Image (cartoon, rainbow, N blue to C red; front, side):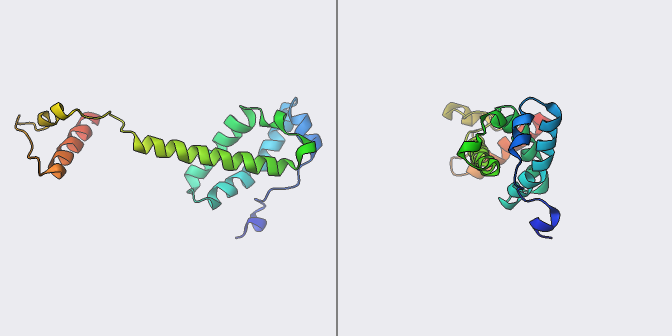
Length: 148
């Protein structure tokens, strides 16, 4: 099924609705409902799965569009609302991927000191220097046990 068949494309926006959505909660809800499917479809096309795309759609609409008052910053003299919205959405996804990448790059439990490496074995023995996979396995098991 194509984007056109699902109605998940970016419609031409009524600037009257955008302007009234700044002050009227009902119009804000209409605007958000009108753009939920197109935003979701856009995020899915960027390679996110259904669950992640739904979460990111909600996050974008709540945190960016409403939370950062993007609707209040939209200016009809500067172009179409949907172009403005797509640009904001692209930037949001770039930020999201950067944050996700930095979370992967930084260890959750901190770096282990070299002196602590000998304390990883339960029996008190030091792991052999040529067996990093064994040390990894023991540390992984200890973390899993600690989480239970």
